[in-house]
Length: 283
Ligand code: C2E
Ligand code: MG
Ligand code: MG
Ligand code: MG
Image 1 (cartoon, rainbow, N blue to C red):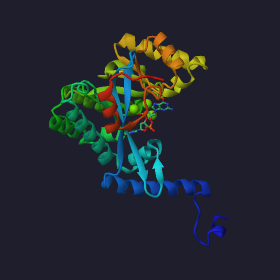
Image 2 (cartoon, helix red, strand yellow):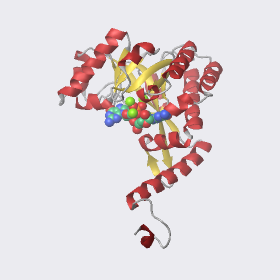
Image 3 (spheres, protein in one colour):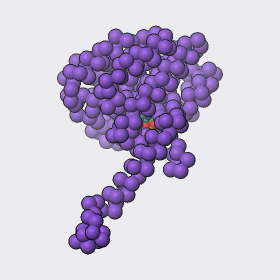
Image 4 (cartoon, rainbow, N blue to C red):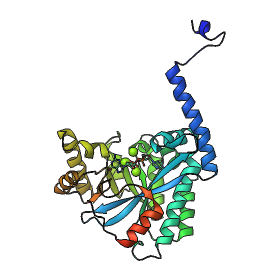
């Protein structure tokens, strides 16, 4: 019957699947062009301590295509990853991070603020990755600890030995590692002590539901305890309300990121705000 529909050609996909594929292909070719012409933007979201002082920032990609409009990283990052575009795109984000950090080294109010970059598994596995990071760090002459890389548990599923080796190499160059979206993957807890990690990031899904779902509350507590016992910094992401902040603080959390403190905005915008005050007011 597939034959009867398509005048000799066979339809493998239903219309909904076909639409998904079409959009993916559309995004991939638009993204290829945008990466080539450097049309994406890097936004910054601050991370604060319990006094609401900005202690670090995370860089997040933003992309608005002239035809397709604004497209979320949640949609285009997986396409960049699948197509290999993540290699040049990810390298560009690291470059932007190191350049910003270099500029900030000359400004007293900003020189102690590290910047974090999200790294996709394919980007981390790519053969030239360590050399690229090394090159950027050297060009920018950064002190150790200023560049953070956010990796996910997905990176630890296969080739753990290679991953660990590479992490140690980067660690020797002064790079710090955060485990992003922690608790949502399926990495063995045994890896935690093997890896040269600096920080765990409590996934925002736990923070979002922690006050209404006891399971999420227990998981959040457990991650904070794990951090204390393994001597790792822990940051909660997706903090949107004072209630969430207070509850996290009562459980011993000392670092926060979320709309309550500040939304991602262009680096220049945050730079201007931070020069006015390093402490963020929450209402
Ligand atoms: P992520 O690294 O876990 O980043 C946190 C996401 O949560 C960001 O979404 C951020 O805008 C959002 N967020 C921050 N605070 C709040 C809050 O209080 N409430 C809510 N509801 N959301 C909040 P965004 O920017 O859309 O990025 C989504 C994901 O895309 C990131 O998740 C990261 O996995 C990926 N991504 C973004 N930029 C890059 C990049 O340069 N490279 C790679 N490989 N991945 C990236
Ligand atoms: Mg992240
Ligand atoms: Mg996250
Ligand atoms: Mg995520």
